[in-house]
Structures are given as structure tokens and as C-alpha cells.
Length: 158
Image (cartoon, rainbow, N blue to C red; front, side, top):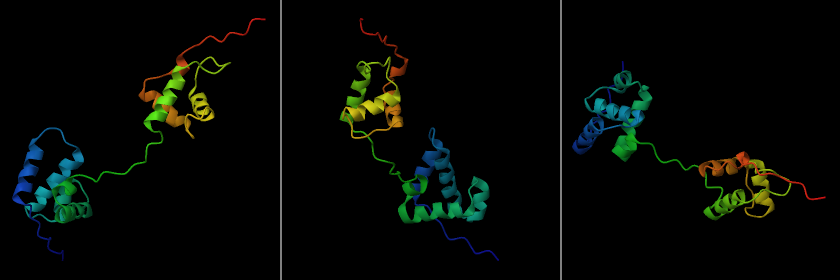
């Protein structure tokens, strides 16, 4: 025999906030499904029945309910902010690399390549170390494509 569902009740102001959220404009699908889950649980349905209605697994429905009980509506609807990694370059280092790219390429080179920018930035001690992908993303964010710029390399006069 199945166990009876844990009693679940939304606070009146949370219920009103959920109604407004569902009536409102564009929201993430994940957030809308979690809001529907909470509303269905409040009507007295069990987690397995709610899971059939919203498309979540029953344990996921229980986790959403537990998050609401422990931490409130915000935590039940939205995920926590993830840490991510720290910036590899600070603003001054980024500016130095951009200035390097805007200058003339080294002697004997027609244009800058991403690999060459990374090597020269370390060689000229603009940054302690930098990878090609970091340089590529930096150049892309500034809409710079130095490898497309053709500078004519001329030999010296004989």
C-alpha cells in the first residue's frame, strides 16, 4: 500500500505570486513547470500524480516541495547561482593585448594570428601567461580579426 502524501500547503502570498508568475510574460520553462508543480501539490495531489501531470520524476517533485519548505519560494523556483571560473585576464591585461593587436605585426609577418598574439603577449611580458582560446575570445568580443588584415611585407633594399 502506498504511503499517504505529506501535507503540503503554500502560503497565501506565495500562491498569489505563483498565479502572477504564470499569468505574466515569458519565463523559463523550468521555472513554469516548478510553479505548476507547487500549485498541484497545494491542491493535495501526491508526488507521483503531480509527476505525471508536469513531466518531472516523482523524486524531483519531492525535491521541489522540500526546497519550498526549507528555503521558500525563490529557492523552489530558481536554481542557485553557480560559481564558474575566475577571469583569466584583468581589464588592464585585456587592453594591452588589444593594443598589441592594433599595432603592426612583428618583422617578417604579414598579419597577426591568434597563436602569434598569444606568444607575443607573453614574450613582451604584457601578461604572465595566456592561451590561444583566451586570446580568440577576447578578440572576438572586440570584433577584431587581425588575421584578415593584409599588411604588405617588403624586403629590404639591396
